[in-house]
Length: 283
Image (tube, rainbow, N blue to C red; front, side):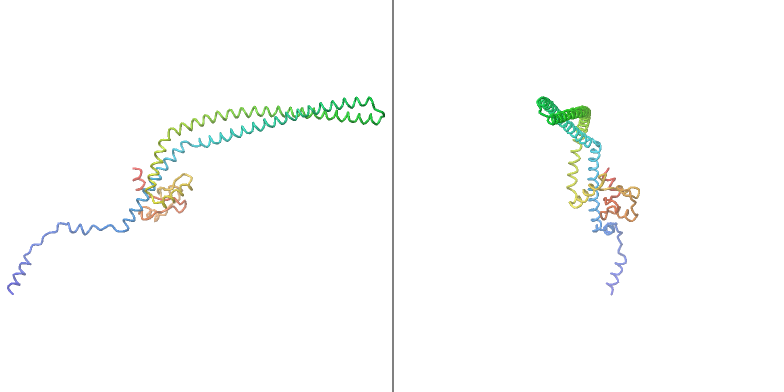
């Protein structure tokens, strides 16, 4: 009994050591859960996608700087080819008309020879019927010669008109060739200025694509192809989609900020990202 009372006194007189806080902080810090890892994974995917979009947008801007020049050059080349074809066709028509003129001149010569022949035969006719028959032949050949002369005049007038047309087309052709030289020179200058930068951006784009899941990359490229401005990933701006500018409901905006899953605009199909990702990429 004596031992027991001594022990109790010792327990009562035992000093309580104050906690240093180490144990408490270790318990308070929770281990990362599966939701946190999912959030980080989706956030990384979205950041990689928006980084790729930023690079591709710079390439698009370079191509916009070139503007319509490539198309203008192509249009001028097509127009020049069309004018050259037109000149060739008209010249061919002129040659055909000149051939017709030559044929009609030969026909007139033949008619005149026949007239002389029939007039000579009239001198040796035996009766009035033969004389009248030859007279009709002479009259017919005279009419044929007159018709040929009329056709020759028409053909010559048409030839002159076509020659004038060819002259005008050739003048227009020379102007278009000069325009083409200017446009080609402008295009070559712009390409020379931006070629190195575009190559660097294309290399960065290729490197960035290697960091993105193949299915996600395929979806991004498909969206870009279908969008007029080349935007496949856009931020939320003023509570609206940065691509089509349709309003986004508050709950959907919250889901976008949480980065727990990839969310697309229900109107245009573009992938949506929050401001934090935009700031991180642009900084």
